[in-house]
Length: 190
Image (cartoon, rainbow, N blue to C red; front, side, top):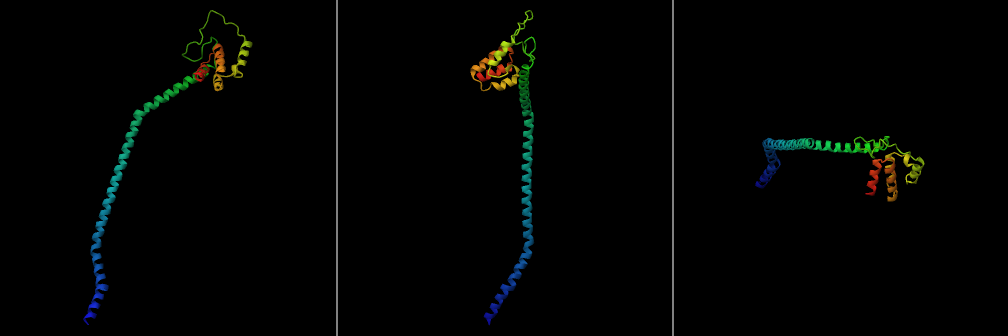
């Protein structure tokens, strides 16, 4: 009978007392473990928030420093470059418009530049042989040369052979002396 008693006690231990003891143990220890886990989780989250906040603050500080540097150092450089570009555009425009208006004294229309040819106040101008000039212009590789503005002539110079560029240079120097055209021929032949 002792075997029956020990088997029933083992079954009772395994099926009743064991689970009951485990449940009581879990009931007593889970709140402690839960507090430990919660505390650990909060500590970790707070640590990561601080690190992320520090990183963001550092990035903002770096961006602010870079912006201040760009404004103090880059601003004058940008103004200088823009000024250079505007001066170049103004010079180009003055040269382009100089060919559109030719004063009667033969001087260029660009302010600040000296006369293209020395002015002869005492001597009367010789009469212009318009038919000879028309024949000369007709011999050029650019049709209707005398009716074109300097910018239109400049567009047509590209692709002309050297001998035709020399003919245009010679004609331009002899008649109107537009610097825009002469400068472009220098660029193409130089």
